[in-house]
Image (cartoon, rainbow, N blue to C red):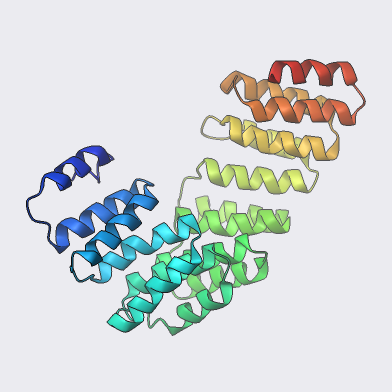
Length: 288
């Protein structure tokens, strides 16, 4: 309960006071740690559970494998995969989906796809893991075809799967596809875009040099833009040497995030590229 409420310290305190720990308590504390980004601690508890002669169940692996994915510890993930095969858990859809996600995040797309293809049924987690893996590692066409195949199998895309396919558009610099998926998200699936979706579209517009369009897009967001979204555009202004727009964007950033050091550095670089040395030095001093 405490772990699900993000009160992981209370959860740990209760766990440590237990006179006897069964499989339920071990799996709960492991899942709680991983869900609260305490990945190393989750792996330590998993090892302690094994040392305590508590036999893992499918949920043990579906909770532990994401820790390996986030830490990109492929060697440990492979050890867990071996344990899963020996225990006969590889047919569990949640365990298999976690393995797909782990291998994809660690960059081993071939193994991720092999596990994915062996699955009898694919859930949203496995589809999204595969699409994001393709997106992050330069396989945009595979990401798009997987997304369309997912739709064809009547699996409804969610918030995260749209984040994955927009990431593919961003990395590949495909503006028209980014607009297509962004509009589909809101009009076809009635999913309200979040900061990550806006940032991805702003990024692809910036990479394409469509800076004014990106500026108008961010300005018209239905939620308040964060400094990180504006920072995406500021980075594009530096690449395309647009000093005037960079100054406007920097103002927006410092209004919502006055301590954003990355923005000061980028501004200094923009001025340096334009040979406006005094402004560059002034920004560097503000950054100190």
